[in-house]
Every structure is written in C-alpha cells, then in structure tokens.
Image 1 (tube, rainbow, N blue to C red):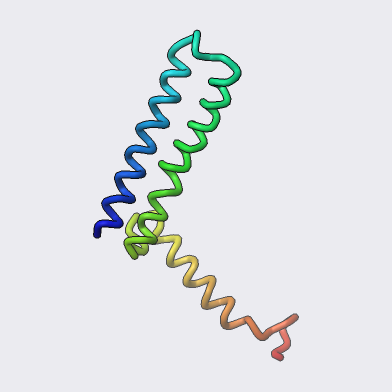
Image 2: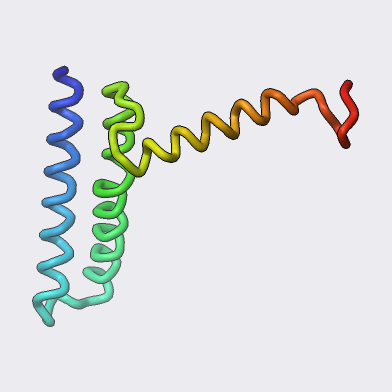
Length: 97
C-alpha cells in the first residue's frame, strides 16, 4: 500500500513540476532562450511520461488488471489473440508438426 502512495505522489509531483516548467517557459517571452527551449523539450517529454505511461506502471504495481474500460476490451482481445496463437503454435502452412 505504501508503494502505491509513493508512486502516486511521484506521478503527481512530476506532472506538476514539469507542467510548471512548461508554463513558465511558454508564458514568458524572455525565458525562450535556446537553453530554456531544450529544458522545455525535456520537461514536456517527462510530462507525457508522467501522465501517460506511469499510471499504467502504477496499475501493474498494484496488480489491477483491466480497471479502465478501454483496457478491459484490450485484455479480452489479448486473451483471444493469446489463445489463437497457442492453438496454432505448432502449425506451419496449415500442416501440423
């Protein structure tokens, strides 16, 4: 449980910090130096990482499978694909090995 709380705090603080960096560089014209644009690029990529990939890692850590409606359909499709691949694993060109 503590790992989930720590993971959630890291996601929240990472997203907030990188969002603030992006906001400051975009909002202030005098902050748009080449060095700060590089920092903006790094902060925006880290923001995308915090918002789009880390929640899935949190779900993996928490052992929550198919908790989101979109993932529920993906799990069903992956299960069907896995069972199809398992069934056809020993077939090459329609011939059984």
